[in-house]
Length: 229
Image (spheres, rainbow, N blue to C red):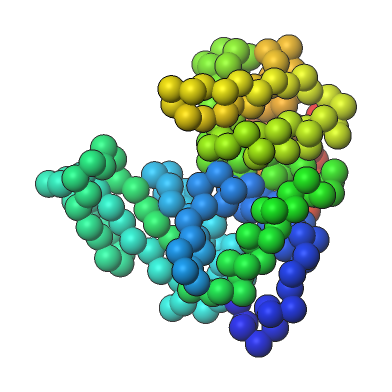
């Protein structure tokens, strides 16, 4: 981000200006990376990483954006761009994309603390990012539709956000052994939830019947068109 202007950006609605930025924010809340003055994403799904990179490219020159690749020892993939490192515990290739920008990091962190104030028009796009990062559903697309959280506060906050839409019944479970909290969407509402986030979600578009490409569903300005009901 052009650092001479970003210092004044400190509100949730400054970061979330359209559905694409709401999706990116949700994805970062799920799989975000930050350290000192760096902010980015860590994920095994290269298309998700590429999408986050395109978002960063709207604010930073290409040379500011860094990509690291981690792979299981002895399984270095071909065609890697940028630094690559073997990781003893890795089971598959993982990517870490980041940019050094303390102002942008502060903006994301402040937005995360105020996610309960997210505008209703951006809730579904935000949940698409959350689902792509930490969500799953049974192959029948009805059972066990879940998003995993590391703490209770985040799970309850997101549950309250969905309550604002008056469309989905949810519940939050605590799994002590795994030290996680899981937000479940009830099976009777699972199909509607998936179709509602499909215009934004790369993961959902891979297993729902194809209707339109993400390019036609999400305009270049990040606003949504032809949303699946």
